Image (cartoon, rainbow, N blue to C red; front, side):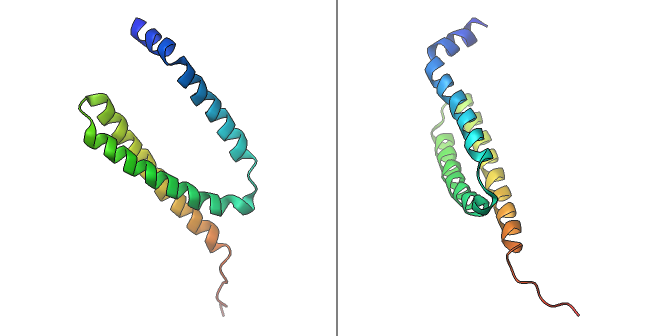
Length: 103
């Protein structure tokens, strides 16, 4: 328990920045109009592609178990986000395609 407390005291500024960025991200994303959703999803897919590559590099240089586990989790979550983003983007673009006449 004291190790956890020491960790939080040592990295309190970084933890504070992460918590603030989470709240800021939620606030910004909740006010995005639906017209901008598809372009933003495409941008998020590109960013998560970079995250996946970075996580693979971290896993390649990991000498201990914790960086290996964190890298693996980052690869899995980044991949899920990219795949989900492509599915949502495809579904959104399907709404704008002309439908064939059915007789």
